[in-house]
Structure formats: C-alpha cells, structure tokens
Image 1 (cartoon, helix red, strand yellow):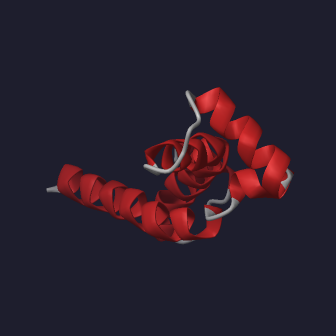
Image 2 (cartoon, one colour):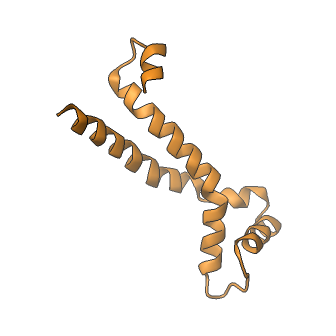
Image 3 (spheres, rainbow, N blue to C red):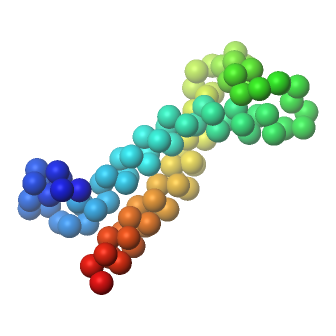
Length: 96
C-alpha cells in the first residue's frame, strides 16, 4: 500500500487500499485452481482416482490444459470481493 501511495500520490486512497488484495487474491485463486479442480473431482463418489496428482492428470488428459482452470472466473468472483472487503474493514478499524 505504501509503495502505491509513493508511486501514485494523486490516486484516490481507495486505489491504494484495494489494489494489493485485488491483485494478490486473484493471483492466488489462479495458482490454486488446478488443486481445487482436482479436489472437487476426488469428492465425486463415482471417481476412482486415488489422489490429487491422479485427478490433475485425469483432468489434463480429458479436458486439456484449460480444464485445470475451469471455474476460475467463478472462484475469483466469489473470493476476491471477500478479501478486498476484509482489507477495507481492517484499514477502517485501524483509523478508529
């Protein structure tokens, strides 16, 4: 946040507050999505896959590389606002 304040001094405070959690939570969601997809696949009672690695391999072989990130946009839309809101509330509470 401080780096953004020095780099973009004329930007609104909301920009300095929102950009870090927005960028970090989006990146984390993208990195974790293949593991999330594999976990969901393993939870299927009809699945005969033994572990996360086997599930990732199965998803890749049946749906291609893009299949590992299927559902990423929904995950981002679900989690990113939650983290941004948490940071906004935390910053606000620190000013009280």
